[in-house]
Amino acid sequence: MGADNIQAIFRNSKHLSFEFMQIRIAQKVKGLPAEDASKLSVDVSGTGSKALVETPADARIWHNLHSIYLSNLTEPNAVNFLTSKFISEFSKQLDHIPFGESRTLPIYAFLQQNMFTASTTTLAGPQILKHSTFVRAFWDYDAAFMTLMQGTPRFIYRKGWEARDQCLEATKKWLASARANVNWETVSRDNPDWEENFGHRLLRQREESLVQYGISFEGRASMHMGLIWAINANAIPMAAYMLIEIIRSPILLHRVREELSAAMVSGTKSCAALDIDIRTLASLPLLNSIYNECLRLRSSIPISRRLRNDIEIDGYTLCAGNYILAPSWLSHVDESVWASPEHPAREFWAERFMQKERAQTKLGDFCPYGGGSVICPGRFFAKHEILAAVAMVVTAFDLEFVKYVRLDGADSERGPGMQNAESRGIVSLDRDVVVTMRKRMVGKS
Image (cartoon, rainbow, N blue to C red; front, top):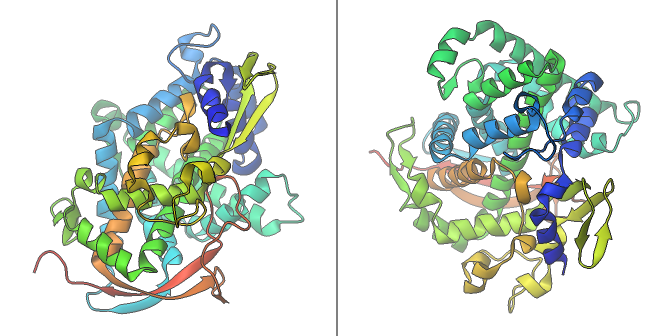
């Protein structure tokens, strides 16, 4: 019944609002000024093409922002460009490691440095990474995110607030520089997919829209910082979860590497010896099953909505003005839906999504990206980015499990778990896995 109720929430999107939560998060965790929050709160017309209340088209900020996300994150050509750009940038990071060299290191920390650089450059350009405080503080800010969201005072959690402040100040410097150095006449005429100052067109168009609606410089910086956080704080942990499951099973690692050979082609668009046929990659059965299984076990979103109108769910009338909160993870580990002989719902099973019965899985049983009118518009690029990162690491390196460690490097008896999981999207790793990586000779001779 829980899955049916979640589906009912998604079906009733026109009666529910999510914008209040976006504003709340932006204020509490991203530094959105109160004046800007008030401006954003005025528009209650929703994100859809049809306004929920009569509103002039040029006053529909949420719809216009959503349209920017859709055009830049869901259209096939846009997703393909972002994916190709990420592959090129991640290749540059991997190229820094000489062939034949062995390194023993925590795999999640490796991704936090190298995948973070590639992903951030793809989205926002290289200039923001020149602000060393942003790079140093980002993962401290990420670790503090939910604690800040809960309103923990600064004097109790100074480290988290200082990390947030450092990221925000670096984003302000980047934004000021981008605005000063971009050739607005040229980008308005040519509308390039990517340029050095703002990075991808998404951020440039978002910036122009927020200026149009009178959002302050500080408010715009906070919202851009939030977008950079959202992409990295979800894609990078998910790539780490996949790699950890693959690496700690030599048999699975061998199977995945064999399957990947169909998607790896001679490098043409990037500096790598091998490039990726992303269409083939996105259809590989085992890799995609591992991706979905890790999403099922390691994503936990609070499906939160405010009722615009009265609605009925499961025989109960929910009254306008109240709030709905539905945790997705409970449906993701429902034994009646997910358990198979010898494979309990809460245990990782690489082949679970290769079983025929999974074709009948309801959205309410599996909703890692949310649902309804506000389903995550970045889900297509996120999937391609994660699969590409995993494929490149598995193909480029010989990988051997060494041990589990805590995030501070101390030895641990277990790998990443859900004991202290926070409902925030992809669950943050509470453990890392030390691996030995040796660069392989692949592709061009």
